[in-house]
Image (cartoon, rainbow, N blue to C red; front, side):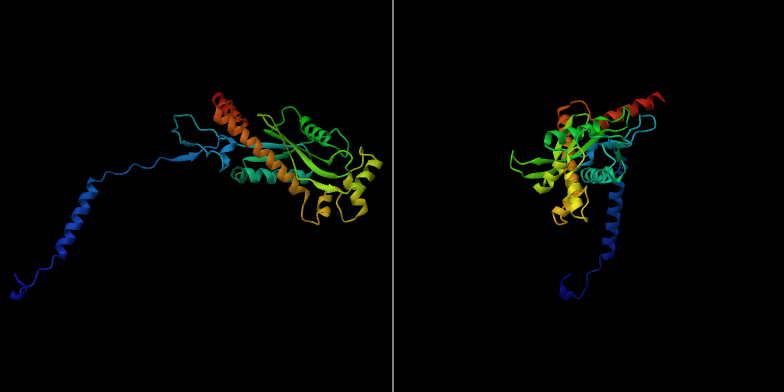
Length: 282
């Protein structure tokens, strides 16, 4: 009818709502039910999976009771060739920086090594003697000691050029793994030549330059003169921590290269394989 006829349109709101509800119910009937998502968990079978800048951790489906269980690494041990709390704390901080997730989940443990001696002078002079002292600290590890990685740290003074009378103190870090040996050094702090000459006169066999500086200044620690010489801005622990972190990252990269090439697995994979064998025997 035309608008002039005076009749009105009947409201269709009710019929439309019915049609909508019917269409929704038809869609609900025709839509197949979605399968339940499969339960998955992360299997940290390699220490390199803990880092974000390298490959991500593999995802292993949770097996049924009839299948073999996925075995994860329980603990990764890092042995430090010293009982010095400063060095052990520096290694712990470096491991925490490189492997934050595994460290927070207590999958990595840093343990000191007893009876670790450098076998060199009390004050090492030159890179060769300092490197030998760091290697000796981890070479005296007892047989059967439960550790995957060993860390040796030794500080020594190095002359910048023969006859220059310019001396810096730095730390040499030796990281011994199943892949090989990785070496790094810390940043150097210059030691005044007058203290070096006095320690030489007394004998490097029993006198360090740090002890000479501590005798001159009562507020100086003989094991940490770096803080005094840098006006409190640089601690020896920071220098050692960065050197250990550098060695750990070098080892990390070498493990990643070997894994991509398909070579033999790293220490953590070997441990996981051994644990699976023992479970089968039980």
